[in-house]
Image (cartoon, rainbow, N blue to C red; front, side, top):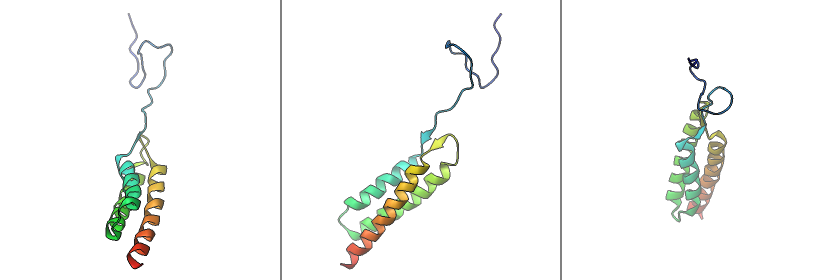
Length: 98
């Protein structure tokens, strides 16, 4: 007769028993935020640069809020996206003025 494992513990044939730890995945918002932040430097139009930078900031903030969950990572990635987007906004403003 086999013993039943408590919920949350593995019995998959490997040696030993231990808690099942979920793997943290990157937030889609943080990935899109970094893509928009990088894209803001590649667009030639000043309005497009600024728009992509604003979208990157919004998605970065959403990604940081989602990174509070232990199942989702990407807080640092969101922070980098927000910093890049802020720099992208400055570049867009300078591009629009000059």
